[in-house]
Length: 216
Image (cartoon, rainbow, N blue to C red; front, side, top):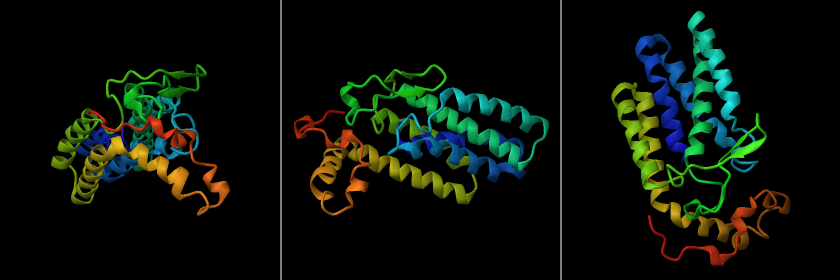
């Protein structure tokens, strides 16, 4: 799923806390947002493996939740929401597509790495790929309760997330071609080779794999 969907989902997890303990609403929403974004910081460094821990985050979230219930405070509630949102991100990615550059082709059987079992979890493709119409629909659905219940500073985050989600969904099917042109034609000779070497291999696929007329 696309990053805006994960960010919105993390904030939705914080809504019950915001309603029941409004004095901790800001801390909870910030932590939910941060946790929803955190796993995708590994996008260019072992994506869905380096910072995606479906089991580890879930265990930490459970422990942190017990602590937060026993000793509610901004730090304990923030920790619980941070880990819960990171866990949800890692788990939700198993419901999407694989790691291939064009996940709508369903050629990759890796969704998220399970560090406990030492193997990749296969994608279920309930959401066919990040930026798919159903992904955008989910983002919109998550944004509605947030828009109705969060304070003005977070309203702007919700609106900005939706704008990014719409733009990403509208251009998702052409992004692989843009990425390939950047990686193979525009960046070589213009950036240090050490930096170019960090570009994932999937961005330099053969041009014949581009979709001339992609379908939704």
